[in-house]
Length: 384
Image 1 (cartoon, one colour):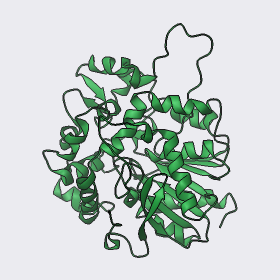
Image 2 (cartoon, rainbow, N blue to C red):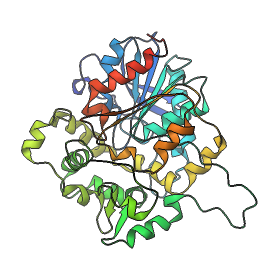
Image 3 (cartoon, rainbow, N blue to C red):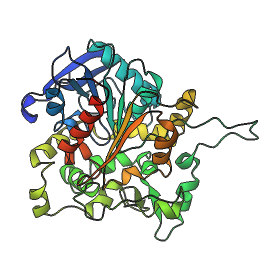
Image 4 (cartoon, rainbow, N blue to C red):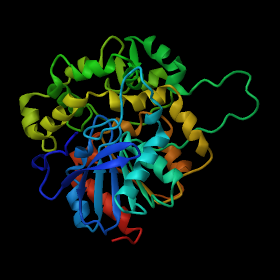
């Protein structure tokens, strides 16, 4: 039986435990603040963990909240999932992550969530929670990944089966492969059989892979200067860094190895210490990455779009806020999503903040600014 994370890895005041029988999972979570206070539910992304919220949990708890960050299905010390490439992927679909969150809220003894806060992959999970159960998830903070909303149903009788949008159709990958030099989309790569072993058993070693991956997507990598792309076209997507649009012949381990920070850069890193890195390496060393990769397979297979069509035409009605790093290409990696979030997917978007000095890992790189924006948003709702 998996044990909770050793509290010695965490800032003093953050608790760790495992809740049994949460939608079929034994869910590992980090916790700060008192049980009777309004709940903030923090949902991490890939390749992250509940541990990724370590810098912001105590300040949020000190502001009067019960703050909970679980290892999501497929990650860390949460068990009850099976991530075999040839196994089922339906349990990693978007609505089951909503069920996980609802079951966790009930297991914690709460009936509602003051705010569900999601980063990276956790952002669409948080958005789907707010979209589908606004009675439980009373507000939402979306981080890094804009929430564009469910795809609409095609209008009129269809002469042929609808091709899944974007990556799943295969057309974008063929267009990227035809570029000079040839490229491929990282989400399609993450959906391949070889992706897990390439990263888990990286030639440079797992700690060096994680260090390079985190550095490459952070504000510490000076070339991260994102901007709006003209559209969903191969020539436009290819303007993004290689961690999104990869060299065709390389895996992610080889791709980020070229951007490994030097000793001076590592020593100067204020947000990912060697001790922090060791926690990520320890956890992913046990589990590998396939659990997290299953959700990418749900996306590229079309399963995500198909499931979320249940809510086509609906928008998030509860108060919403968006936070990302000013140096985060995640803001623009899906052309049109930022505009869709601002224009139609969120009925009550109360802030759109791009944090200076942060790349993709905004709550780790700039925790004080992140906490400030979250608390400003919560105060606007007249909560503690």
